[in-house]
Amino acid sequence: MTLTFDRNTLGNRTLAPVLTAFVLSGLLGIVTEDSEAAESANPAQTEYGSPVSLSQEALPVLETPFTPYLDTDTQAIMIRAVRFQEEGDHDSASELFAQAWQIARVSNGLYHQSLIPIVERMITSEVALENWQAVDNKYGLLEHLYRRLYDTDDERLESGLQKVSSWHVNAFNSNIDGKRKEHLQQARRIFLARLEVAEHTLPETDPKFAFLRESIQLTETYLYLMSERYIEHARHNQRAAEYGLVASVD
Image 1 (cartoon, rainbow, N blue to C red):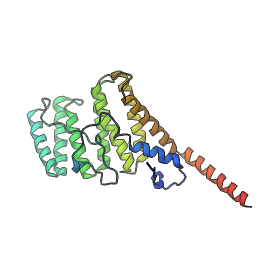
Image 2: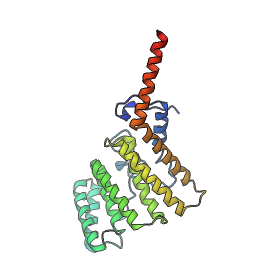
Image 3: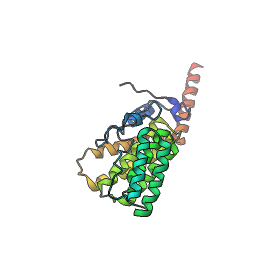
Image 4: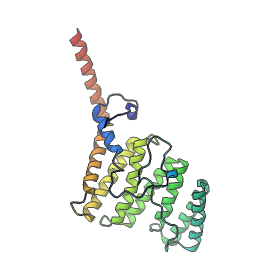
């Protein structure tokens, strides 16, 4: 496979060497290699409107709004919201999901598993509307819910964190909102948390350990390549090389 790298991805800095291309190529494969990726999302919801497609686990797997945790009023609102969503009216759907969210919090408490499918539905509509800051905020909320609801020895925490790390890696890959470094930092943080969960829930031979450790290493390497320290070092080397070339010509 031939590795390619768009030098503009470092903010128009043109000093990154071949190693950068290798790291970027590795990151492009991080999410899709996850052995527990969710089923493919709906094709209509799998594009950011950019050259990079959402991976299989990038969008949350939408659960049915009919759950034993939601009261009758909230269920009715969710049914209407989902109908709007399926019809492509995501503005109306988002308004109703927000209502359902508020009612569910009053009925069940600030941290309850009934809130998770509501947030996931919200995310789907925000993605369709390309409201990327709202998408990022909702994934932050989703992470907060999972962390409050489940301990590190609960596999359900891994399920939630997997969705969040997928968002950040895909947002980094596509540079969807111009915050590549921030998304990479968040992805590294979530991969570390997922590794902690794996250490409490999986046997040491599970292949997920290799996946998570490789992902952590790749994010750390690429963060270094994006750092001012590395950029300055590359500039220094370039100046030294140019000086040496001039001296040899003389």
